[in-house]
Image 1 (cartoon, rainbow, N blue to C red):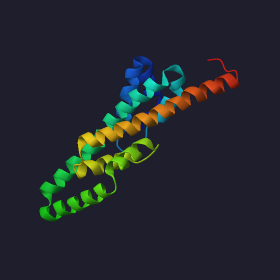
Image 2: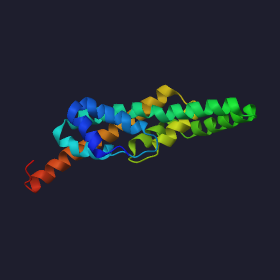
Image 3: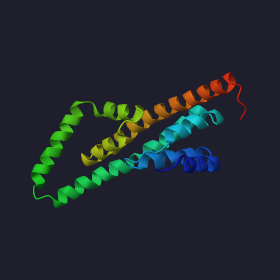
Image 4: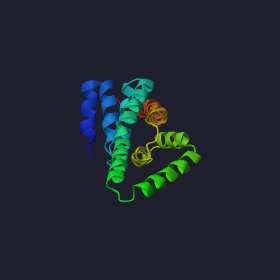
Length: 170
């Protein structure tokens, strides 16, 4: 697991660029948990929470392409290696139709905005069915920016409230 110290070091050295990079790294680590939420929440009082949320959201949305690429590659591999190419293509088409029926843009946005949602699995799935990269990125980006901006605002006001309330000096 990528530790809190690693992310803190990057942020201390690079500021907003560091937040962007940890957003990319955190989302690119498929199925490996990272302390991104903690870093954003606890760092928020020292940064502009709106800019912080936008920067981390952009980085995180870009990092989600790792899962998308894995899914895309796996689908191509199965397509090449499968003895039943026609049946596989038909099954993928059926899954695509089913996904399209349930408003995929809303599904992607919902996964992106909800904390701890399995966005890696969704990215792999979207890559495997060759869902539009532009739509995937746009709705992932929108959800991630909202999520991390909200988290940064909560950290900014929450930590300042705690510091003031308990008269803590940093």
